Length: 121
Image (cartoon, rainbow, N blue to C red; front, top):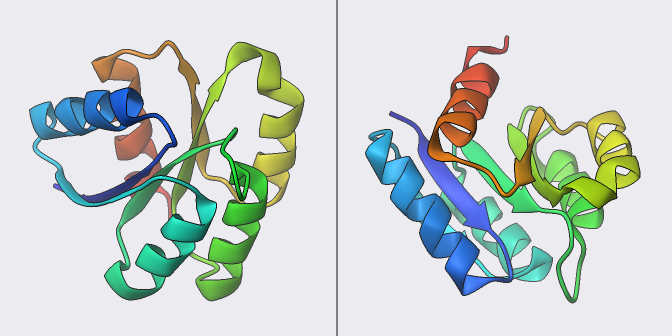
């Protein structure tokens, strides 16, 4: 069981991911609505894994990822994206993202990606 923070500007996506994570017996320790909110919460909560949306208002996923990595280089971040943002995903992987899932996603894909990043050394 991992402690996970969900970062997405869509309440529906946050709730969907939360339900998926509960099925996988993970603990959702924080929900953030944008990159600014995520960075504030990450600094105090220190989750095992972050599910981070790429396209958000105020601070996008790539910028948020870079700031999280400055706080903790070993942070495990899974980017959440739609298919047409693949160039951005490549930039996120180069900036230190551990994995990504593509919307629309299913429970199995999300849970597998979390197990994958938790198994990284």
